[in-house]
Length: 217
Image 1 (spheres, rainbow, N blue to C red):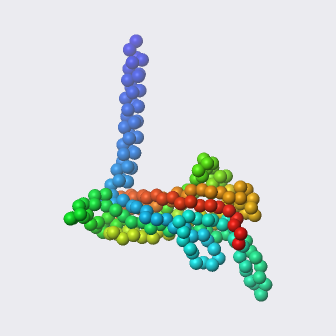
Image 2 (image 1 turned 180 degrees about the vertical axis):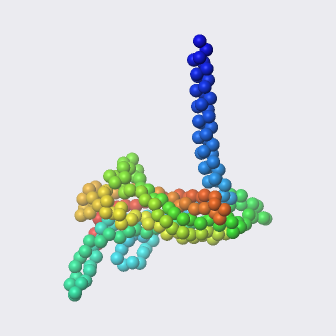
Image 3 (image 1 turned 90 degrees about the vertical axis):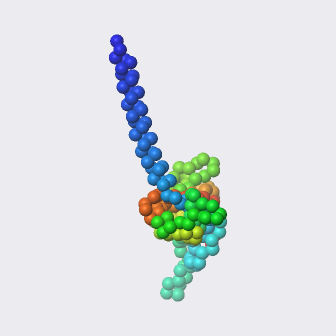
């Protein structure tokens, strides 16, 4: 008649063991992430709308043209051709010591504290809560980039803000010719991933506004 209590005790022990393992796993990841003595800070994010001109004008938000009409001359004949350009971004990033020391003896980072950024991740969201990728917002994507931060300096890290493939898939392709909702206003979140020279992982995130439409050329 004591078996039910024993079963409940065994179940409780198993539950505690599973929770301990899960906690240990999460704790290990968090410890590794926070083990670096440095953190990354984004000072600013700037965006440039893709164009045939090639020269980029960077601003604090992005007006993304889902299709651009360009003049192409072949054999003396000029033809207007629909073209897609990716939009570019750059983030000004610096690193800051977690323990800055004192004014008299500030903490100076060593070469081992240098952080190398190797990749980034871009996602899109809307403030109205309609966030289904491929329906309401473009699909998220990952990209590779390399920049190393040392000392008190900053680095301009380039990235794709909107890719060609984003513009050739719904919902952005639906905007061509003034179709769909005509405009899609979204917030893009970009996260940069890196490691210091002893392998400690470091991340930093920032956001920017983006308006998608088939603007006049």
